[in-house]
Image (tube, rainbow, N blue to C red; front, side, top):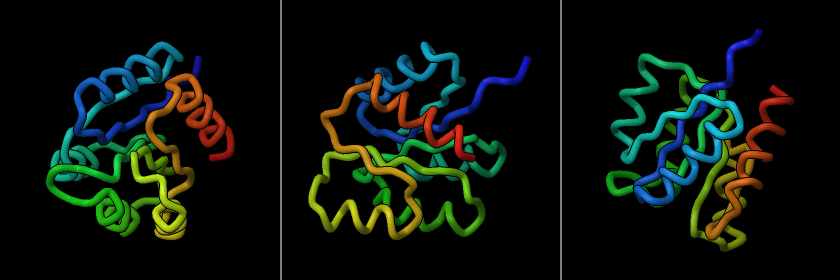
Length: 122
C-alpha cells in the first residue's frame, strides 16, 4: 500500500485551517498546518510535503513572498488559497510559481479535488 500524500497548509485563520485539515485528512491525506510563514519555512527545512496550500495574507509575510522563497529550493506544487480575487493577484500568484489559485470563500470538497488533480500530475 502506498503512503498517503503529505500536504502542508499555511493559513493563519484557525477556523479555515481546521476546515482544510479536516477536508484533506477525510480524503485520506496527511495534512500539517502552519499559521505563519516563519513556521512554514522551519517545517520545510526538515520535511518535504507533496503539495502546499498557501494563504496570501499571512501575519508575518506575504504568501507571494513566501512562494518565491519556497521556489528557491523546491518545485513542490503550490495552491494559493486567498481572499484576494483580483485578476492581477491571480496572475501574479500563477506567474511566481503557483500551480493553482483558489479564492475564498471556497468549497473544501473542491479544494480537495484540486489537490488530488495536481497530485495525479506530479
